[in-house]
Amino acid sequence: MSEWFGTWFDSEYYHSLYKDRDYTEAENFVQKLAEHLVPRATDLILDLACGKGRHSIHLNKMGYTVEGCDYSVNSIKKAKESENDKLHFYKHDMREPLPKKYDYILNLFTSFGYFNTEEEHLTTLTHLYNGLQDNGTLVIDYMNVDYVLNQLVHKETTMKDGIEFHIKRELSDGKIVKHIAFEVEDGWHYHKEKVSALRLEDFTQWLEHVGFTLKETFGDYNLGSFDTLSSPRLILVAQK
Image (cartoon, helix red, strand yellow):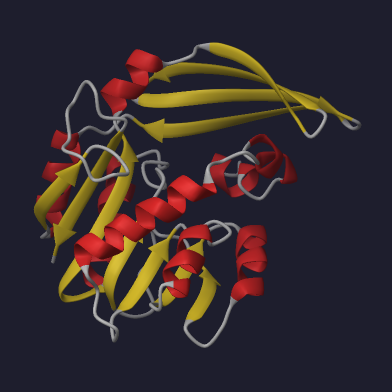
């Protein structure tokens, strides 16, 4: 059976459901992050799990040399339309070793925690560690689990592109699960999104286990301080 992220992220209906994402917020976050980290002009940045490349494209417009990779064939195909001599994209499963070494690896917008086992997540972090230059930097932008659970909307219906999406959310077996159902011409479709309920202590333990040093944590896209109850995000900056 295919993994949920292998089929759902490649579906046209995934892009319909999330068509209204805030691109301005994403660009502002990348801008603030770059101003904080201050990459050199010669540094190579990887946007890991880049989707269609919105973060990569903005970083490239800022003058940086960027590569983006993603598991979704269709997303990479779309991202490649924006390629230039300092911006390239390729398909990649983050559980596999990276093809080269980077100065910065950015994993943004909760693009981690999809796998079934702790071993898979640790393997991924090991590959990221090995895929960084000495003293290289990893940034993981994750949901703040306690904030999400406190705000969780258990059931809702939303209309996108003329399709009525029925959504249910729950915490199950250590994962925040979103059940998505909708009817189109060929009948009903059912998908799940399953993201591990990883907290700061989980990431701290895992990062240190593979060799990283956790340098900073932030709680929002303005790089405000992290608070377990009130911060919408958990943004981690780790160094090799």
